[in-house]
Amino acid sequence: MSTPVPRTGRRARAPRGGPPSRSLAAMAAFLTSAALVAACSGPPKDEGSHPGDFTLSKGTPAARGEIDSFTWATYAEPPTLDYTMAFDYPQNTILSNVCESLMRWTPNLTMEPGLARKASNPNPTTWVYDLRPGVRFHNGKVMTADDVVFSLGRQTDPDNAAAWAQIFQNVASVKKTGPLQVTVGLKKPDSQFPQYMATAAGVVASKAGVEAAGKDYGTSGGLACTGPFELGTWSKGQSVELDRFNGYWGKKARAGKVVFRFMTDPSARTNALLSGEADGGYLIPTESYGRLKNSGAGTLYFGEGLTTVNVNVTNMKGPLGDVRVRRALSLALDRSGFVKAGLGGAGTATNSLTPRASWAGASKRTAQAAFGSLPPAERDIEKATKLIKEAGASGKTLTVATSSIGQDVSLLATAVQAAGTRIGLDIRLKTIAPNAFTALFTDPNAREGIDLFPYTSYQNITDPLDLLSNFRTGAYLNFAGYSDKKYDQGIDRATAAYDPDERLAIEVELQKHAAGQLLWIPVAEWPTAVFLNKRISGAPTTISYMYYPWAADVGAAP
Image (cartoon, rainbow, N blue to C red; front, side):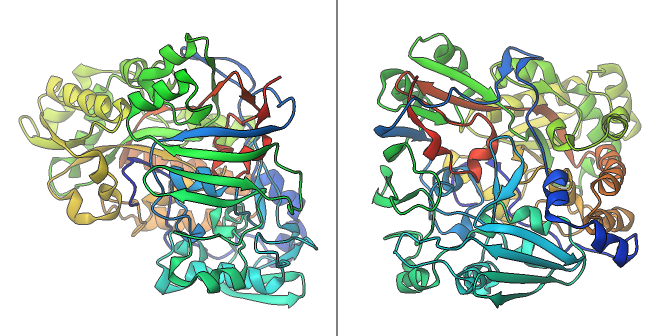
């Protein structure tokens, strides 16, 4: 994670899989692509009022017609647009319009066929992808099964250090089984792998195009993908341009060109949106919500983000090794105050590690079980202080990382300091430069001397296991080094369960366990924010823009 941002999805996974809990014959009968789509659905909440000072919208008004071009403000420049490294907001916001995957996320956060017209699984360890005929890459070549085998193979090539490599750890083989058919063999049943084929993990690029670019692939020239836009001019440090691809197999993009401008300063980004220098943008600075909402220059929308704001525990060798200290901090946090100040009122205080929308496919009873037994989110200073004394932690020092990268980070760090101080801890803040904050995710040395840091996390798929697997032994984002054999076994059982009801029931128990350990202290759910000025419309409001070609829907405002 080399971009200066504290917000990220899950870029890596621990090994998954385990023995199926039902007979293989029964599972094979159940496993159809239609059932998979239903199991992976995560529609946004109904449009309308939401707790807090915001409203969730299902989308923005459909565009009236075509537009020559529009400009989009982004908070950082991608270090590369190689799809194997597309694990963060800057890369995916751009790349989702250029490169496409075997399956596709929709604006409603459901999954549908993408470059594969059909996905089927004749048995629990086999997935067959039948490809669309006549799909052309931006370099003019026609997509074949060879391109798919090559593209997925790049994710597992050690020389690429792919961000998505662990998604493929349960893959035994990827083979061409027809001119337009690829078969993936799994080592064990894996309910998660087919869902990730709708993310950048499932991107297909031209084998000839990638090989021709060599080591420069992703940083210069074309990307040899199939999306509605192709990579145009990349002015390093300033902007990336995408040009409409007239040979696109699907619905033609409404805009002839999209210009992504890199604007790292939140104030400059806001001013660009207000002045018309930029027509729109995602990830709006929270401190600018009110200003943009009342400006008259356009409309600020909120949609389902599958995003939670947390405090990540990174050191279990000190006072935080006692769960009572972690629970005390959770009890002392002023979540509602943080939502109001740090998220501009657009958020919901929560005691859940997983966002509620990730449980959209659960029955009412299962959903109630998932959220009904969680630790309280309300403040209880008296109880928190008592826990600190019982743990013998009064006066103990903890260090929290903070940064000026955004007030969602800086104000949460301040809130943790205030909470700890009230219950008898000595909380110290360590300021990290914005361009170094991301190193906390990638470099253990950067976390030396830090006990906690603000962490905003989005789910890559609409399955609670996407987040809950982070607390498995050895998981990439398990910075605290937590290990519990029983929990690991639960992850294996959930992964192996293709039946969504069976899997969600296991995930309820996993959530309960993880919530009790408080390896991340959940603080708030945070919706996606998008601003559109009066020139344009059509952009989705949900976090689907990470893997859906959203810019193709943007055109002239009604």
